Length: 118
Picture 1 (spheres, one colour):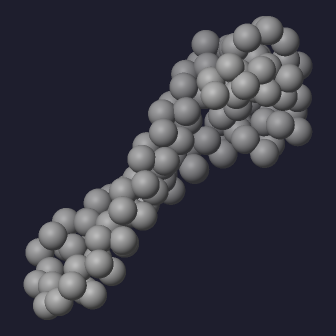
Picture 2 (cartoon, rainbow, N blue to C red; picture 1 turned 60 degrees about the vertical axis):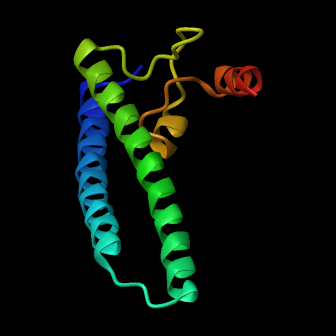
Picture 3 (cartoon, helix red, strand yellow; picture 1 turned 90 degrees about the vertical axis):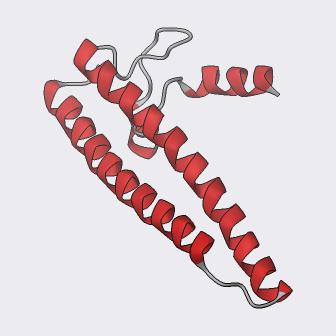
């Protein structure tokens, strides 16, 4: 069971990560806007810019997904359900939460969930 101090610690980590992601999203979005304004002189420039844009877009998608997970975790802290597996409703191991602060499932249920979603 997580203590009040544990919850505050996780909340601070989540809030710090949220700030970092929001900063990353603003930066990447600005870079993508600047790319649209570039004058590309040849196919090589265009190919390089396109490849970079694809990578940046994939990063944006991943970061937005993580941001949603963080928001969910912060809501769970408020509702006092943080650290409880969404499937089996057992406590999620603290070591797992340390690695993935916004974990929604215990290790066992995560593996089941991943197999079902494939």
